Length: 139
Image 1 (cartoon, helix red, strand yellow):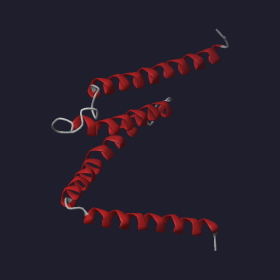
Image 2: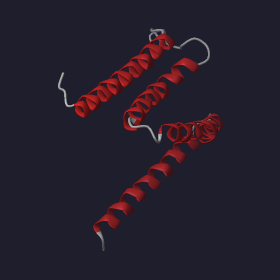
Image 3: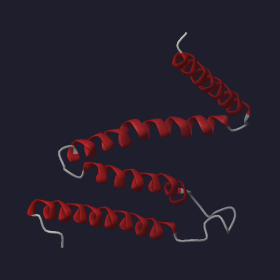
Image 4: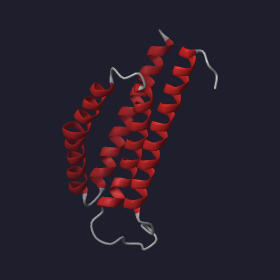
């Protein structure tokens, strides 16, 4: 038997086992209905909003020379937003005062601006280097 097939089945079986364990743990919770509503909402937001948005942005930058740079910047920005969004959207005060001690909205804007400035700067440097190679000058 092909060792890759064995590995694929082992990883797939482990994944199915973890899904079953997770479902069992959710069902054992007293508020499992709330978790199911949250999961359904996450599915709708992902398939109805995030996936089409990612595809649209991918189509917009497909022909650009620096598409890898923009993809990287968008992955970083998206990851930061996904990590921060639950803290920003949490209703009411934090149960623990130390849970949200910083202004996360402002800090998210600063990080996203830094990612944008870094991507634009790196794009400009790359464009400048290409123009220097074409003209044959070094500085």
